[in-house]
Each structure stands twice: as structure tokens, then as C-alpha cells.
Image 1 (cartoon, helix red, strand yellow):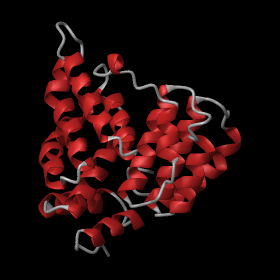
Image 2 (cartoon, rainbow, N blue to C red; image 1 turned 180 degrees about the vertical axis):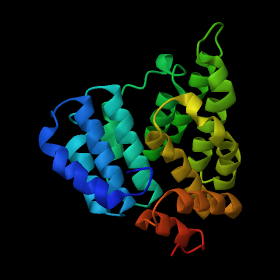
Image 3 (tube, one colour; image 1 turned 90 degrees about the vertical axis):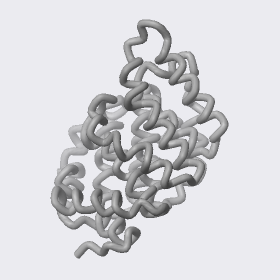
Image 4 (cartoon, rainbow, N blue to C red; image 1 turned 90 degrees about the horizontal axis):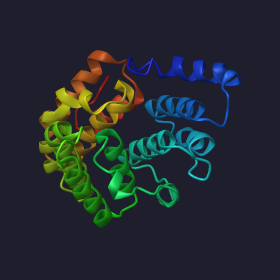
Length: 239
């Protein structure tokens, strides 16, 4: 439903299935995250933040999966210029982000960077990125090739986005789209990268990339409010 833009159906299904969720664990939080994605596809900003607070509030997160979902959802909100208040700061307050653990998972590093950039702590974000790259380059490191070939330019692109260098962000991230499966995660989880590229294209000058991404959305999804939003931002209205 998410990948086809069937957000109305998805919202109804999530509401109907909620009584069967076992609360207080990573799976229920992840279901709440999926529920919020349907809300964002409908551009229901209030519902998206309400679902964040109900399922991913930093005060109740306990495991990495929950923090990754929280960072992903807040980043998507920020791309849509939704004011998330102090949620970034609360998320980072409970997330150690020890640099000695950086570099072992590009997927995790990406979401850690979302948190740091989203909170405006760009100096720490740059330090974390340097350490992630350095750790992955240590002899025999299992993630070395993925970091060099995908992770390093991806993280640099997110840093460029955070610095307002949107054309650099699209230049760094755009060519990686065909290799994103290498960092792990589901299609729905990795779609945040396309959302980032759409935002960068809309804020910068890479309109051709934005038009391509928008065309992909038109061909694979229903004409959702979110697709129409990006069409308006890219001066390419979606009917």
C-alpha cells in the first residue's frame, strides 16, 4: 500500500489492526512508524506528529530500531517544513551515538546523521561522519566496501543538505540510487533518500533530477497529496 500510494486504504487498515498490536516493543513502534508514513502521504501533518508521540516518543524508546524510525520520521517531516519542536533534541538526548560504533552499518549511520543534522549539531555530525569513514577503512572491516562506494558519498550528501548546499547534495546522492539496496533496510525505509533528493532539487537547481523522481512517483503511485506537494515545489503540477 505504501509503495503504491494507497494511503487511504493503508490508514484504514492500520486503524483496524491496531487492537492486535502488542504495545511496548520495537514491532509496535515500527507499525506506528508505517502508520505515520500513510499520514504524511496524505499530508496530514498533525496526525504524523501525533503518531510519532504515541509510538516513537524519545522518552519511551529503548532499542536502536525505535531511534532509527524516530529519526527517519522526523527527517521526513523536516523535509516538508513541518515544525517538530524539540523532538530532535529529545531524541539525541537518549541516543549515545558513540563514534566507536560508527561505520558498521551505513543504514544506522545515515539515520544517526539525520538526527544530528536535524538537531542542528552540524559540527558533531561532521565528526561522526569522519569517524564512521575511518572505522570502516580499518583493515579487515566488514563494511569497508559499502562505506567507500555508497556510504561515504551518501553521508557527505546529507551533510551538504544540512549546510544548505542542495546542488552538492543531489550531485553526491543522486548517482547512488541504484546501489541503495546495499545499505540494507526496506524499500519504504530507503524511500527517505528519494524524499531528500526531491527536497534538495526543489530548494536548489537540480530540477531535472527532481522531474525524474517526480515522474517515477507518477508512474508507480497514485496521485497522492505528497506527490502533488512535490510537483508544486518543482513547478511541475501533478493532476
